[in-house]
Image (cartoon, rainbow, N blue to C red; front, top):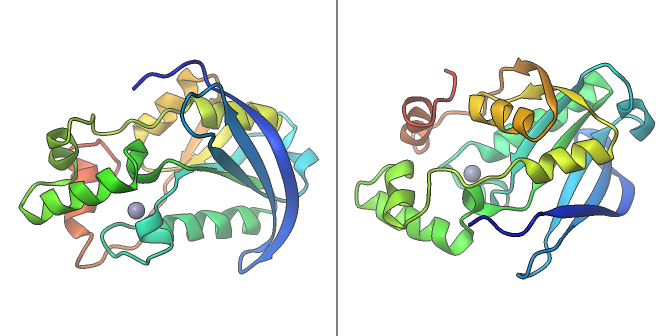
Length: 205
Ligand SMILES: [Zn+2]
């Protein structure tokens, strides 16, 4: 799945009033891919210039989840995680959520729904992806790091329970000064999914 070196460029930006206050949306376009051009987003609370300082910036790297965020699927906690991270940066008055357009941890919507079908036959989230020939998590943090760098951010306080995310960002050149524990909402449908994230993917409880 390793493609050519990915580069991104800032395409447009505008403030948007939201339920979590006024947030500035900065859109990046991914270049150097043979496949369809993709866009990623930095959602910023506070002044853009305030991100450029030595102080670590409160940040989350979030992967798109159409089923959770748009459909309101109860199979995962992505919508709650996105909302709580936007509320957190707004409350802090300074922060960023990097929103990566990579559905289903990078496997795409069609394959994600295929994996859900396998899960209905008894596979867990990791086994289902493996049965489809994908590694458990294909996300690359290089795009996120490139976006953070473009915003002038060198160091982050990262909202996540996933230690791989901290390691991935560090490897891509962004200092993770601290990890801020971050939860979505458990329910009767995503309990197994959340448990597998802890036992198989090494997420913190
Ligand atoms: Zn989700």
